[in-house]
Image (tube, rainbow, N blue to C red; front, side, top):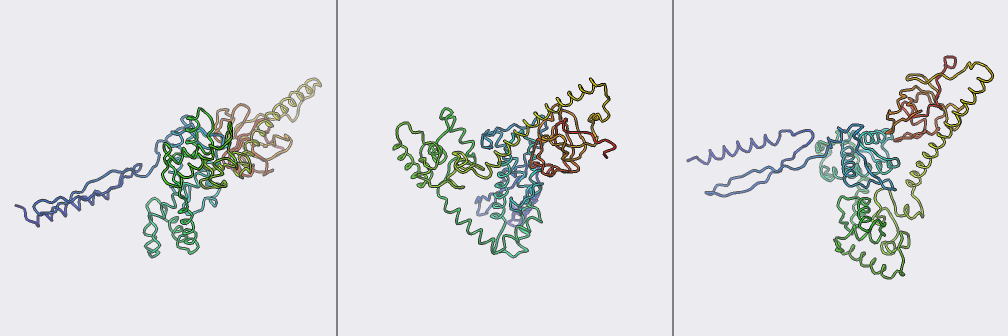
Length: 457
């Protein structure tokens, strides 16, 4: 019969073996955390410890999205407010964005999002456009979403790994593996400042004031709105109806505050005149119960959109900026098409006059070719040169800024800006003017690009 000493020896070997198993690294694309459950079984007055493993999901890296080619880009549908609304593809997009936000490479964790440089943000937009087929006008939502994801990740890291009671060296040694060393040091230094502690306590107090709990889970307001709209036969829900859908299940709310608000809205709704539609506005039923529109619970339109943007009282700066870009882009497109027609007519007229007079054209424009040094001209004034550059491609199928060049367009590398504030004909990412595109390639209509002659160089 084995002695107690033999049993304890075997027990010690088993524990060391399990410890060694726990230290083995997992697959790079799926890290698995080991959760140990200790169960005590008593037999013959000897305590036997049974160690069980439980596999849990590790960090999200979205490896399948990284393998998507240009031809297989994932198409995502957006609504009129620039928010994604397709449940499946939106989930893929947001999870992929989350993996980028947590990487530290694309989104520095120690920097407030407004202070992250435009170059870093442009890289993020380029990465997304490489993997997803995104419409124009969605950059505003994407960048705001990145800002929110970085902020949430920073809060989670602080909650799980930062202990203000520890000494500085111990705090530094508590760094999570997924956070860069330099970024972690800067975070700890900032969190240790008295001013940061005061702001943190103030934010905690503000969060504690939020009493109502929604029942939509991770589903965005934009997606939920589409579902409610479909259930209403395609009709846009009133804010009262949408609040009820987001904060109750089959009419049952999670807490008294939400239930009380729903009851009050139903009471006011029953008092509306016959045929009244309760259109969204500062005097609708929802506003009377919840108060003024703000960035908290009172909007119900999701990230990047306020209720006032919808009913048109005071458009937000983001909405005005988005609309201005979209209208400007359309105007530029129409102006470019008109200028192209004028350039062709002028060229035909010149050739016709030269042919009828029998004169030879000495300064006939040289044909465009890849690698040629060129002048880039304004589409509003073909005699005005806005930059010098070099042609990279004349292939109509070439992708520039997520869009095919198309016939009679060329890809030009902007090298020497002359009129820095000239707007690009096709803007993409954070490239809006010639100045923004220095060193990068842009799409430009061929009639407004001319080869630099040797006597001009």
